[in-house]
Length: 550
Image (cartoon, rainbow, N blue to C red):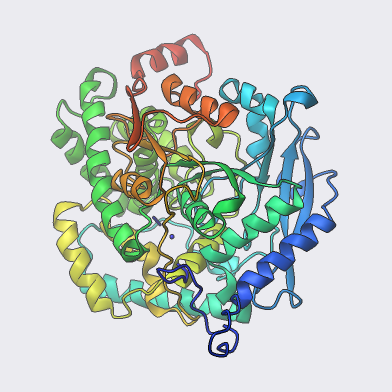
């Protein structure tokens, strides 16, 4: 994943800032963070933000307006330091009589911004939803201009070419351990004492303040990937404030999974999705010439890795950059044709497509989240240094991690025998958490009682690698009355508003009417998979001079 915080089974916060114990027979005082959240929400409602032109840094058209919503850095001290969250909005396009309020969206990460989300109003799949709702995006705490977190001077970033061994040597491991320690220390030094306040529970509290600032009596929210996790925290903490919620590509929310175990499961799931991609390439051997079996395609991929290790393409693309490009194919099959074509051309002596695709300046940012295929194209690029810093801060703050590299080495050496594609890359992305200096939290037990929460909608692809399908089943079990829509035999990470009309029908019906599919006690529906990419039609488009969308 490349997702915490601190509630007991009875729902009471377990924090060092709890008020003094009450006298015998007296009611227990609410936790300071709860009081702080209520106070911040009341302030936001009393002084709503003024929307106007968006900052130039957001690169949004004039049809989108922006504002700043102020939240406490520390909810236990709401009168202390406050930070501003950048919020974007497009008003509902339909008549005022049919407006249903604001729909707030988060694309995941941790570390991704959704200020681009209002642009979805121009996409066909969102037309009816955009007529009924204001579409609202925002940059969560730490992201972009929202009190940004920093862990590393830009001059110190590795820009490639980089290695990516699937069987790292002891020397390589020691070098990565040293790098992880340096990065963790950089987060502490550059962000300072405020670092401890960047975590998922505060993201959920910020959502409550944002709801109040927008003037909404109850929250309508859609989260993808990591956005489902703190959305589930919100549902657990503030069930009475939920109107409708969509959880797209859900994170497994069990406390034992946050976050070390989730990353192990993710690496295993990426191995299966990598096999799906290679199988698809093999079926189109007449186009790509990379082999007629998944195994043969894999051998050609390894040949490319070896050649790039010896001679980086353009001096910029090594095995690490190749891996980053191929990893994107695990998130969404919309990336399959371009990755397969670049690999094919490289092995035939033309490195330019691979350089254009995989050179560091062109790599997509973010390591664990997705905006969904229909929204991803609308999202502007984000500073990868900031995205990585927020990702690291949130995941490391959220939960205990093994603090001895020997544990990581043991678990992932075993896993890499079954899943070599992503395992070690996932280790290096998360290893700073082994050397984190900020206080760690205990994950909240996400759970709602029957009747406590209105029906919510869960969307999941059966072969999702970034958030494996078991997470969707577990989230449905924990959120009483929720409904699950499954896209069978598909693996796109984030399916709402994408290329599956069946999924989009369920999403639209739910957001417009509140109706969920299926019958109690287990509300479920399934959709056939969306069509896989057709490389033949893409080749024909190129030959005719028609631009490709891939």
